[in-house]
Picture 1 (cartoon, rainbow, N blue to C red):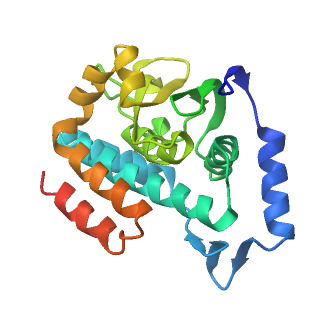
Picture 2: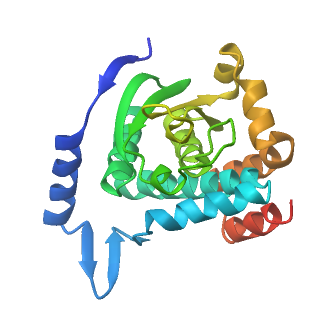
Length: 235
């Protein structure tokens, strides 16, 4: 039987322990103007920049593009971490992904419900991006950056192509942002697939996601990231 977690799980100490271990073993380095996680080069992106990007794509009615680009980013990053650190179980992939996101300053994560191969249900308190999205009146959640990253990264947790749907959003006055990453079957069983399709216009972006997903696991993804981003920006 697959392991299922319920109840909110906090990981502040786990995050600090992870960072300390990576620094002591020199797997995470801050040297020569570079931040390196093994062979993965990272940068610190100001929260206001993501906020400005979100507002731009919203005004242009192109949030689906931000979601797809973020999905690619999350999929690629977690995929590289899985390869470089030999993460061989869904739990290891999930814990690493969430701890890495929190360590990068993307809010405080709490897992509420999780079943490998199906879904991940979590909330984010103190979402840093919503600070720059106050006053938006959209009537729907708008954090497509985190949703995309978690949907893409979640593919490696669940072993299938996944999407992420934001259920609650601080920009709408909710106390926290609430997200669900799930497979297509899981989202359908929860009555969320139609909402996901409409919000992200999956008829346009799902074929691109499938191309990238398949190519990555065949080691045929060289140059494909920029190609798909170019296609996405033409939608």
